[in-house]
Length: 316
Image (cartoon, rainbow, N blue to C red):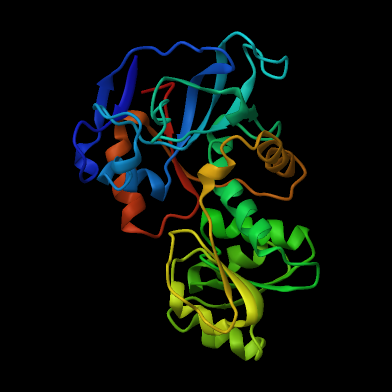
């Protein structure tokens, strides 16, 4: 079968179509005929070799991809009745695991990493959900804010940030979020959000609204120490790239790693249900044939993409 990967790590030009063996599901596993894969910043890090040290597959090709949507075409033994051949599903894929990444015509995964796709979305849109929504879920769970608490979000126009905003609003938090001028309308469309200008001085703008600081901060734009002044004493900060700084003032830093949620079947099904309930909004920036993965990575790393670029594995 065909996949898209790298035989040596590097820039987008290293991505190409490769032939790999068709996988067969073992006990407790399912095989998915992949229809669509969302392109995430994590994919670019994997392509560059940032995860090579912990990859369980040591021989090329190395296949990126954490977000897959498709149809189950085989089920291994010792599975429960939750998943069947023909089911439309979405899955969290860990490219550094023994299973490899999602950029392939067929993938085998533990059944615990697979849930039914949203009924209200096509598979292209559905492929944009799981990894970013579960990262947002982990961040909010770590911050553990109670209804009425204040939460600041940077990168609110991005996939992760927008999901944080929508989930937080659904849980009764007061949300203040950043936006570039071109993104203000979109961020406001997420709900009852206070919007401040995006930039290195975002903390100052937040302090204008909340002089004592906010209770929690989800830093989706990876500004790290720049956002710390906006957090009140004893507050909490969720970071997604492992910042190791010391914010002081009793502020707790939560380092969010989404692989921890790879087998949280109930949590993944919950965010799927929240799509169908209208709590979460799926956004597709563009759909490209899978053999144009190089272009997708170039566009993503150039910045300014709103929503996710999706790779089509049915028509490539």
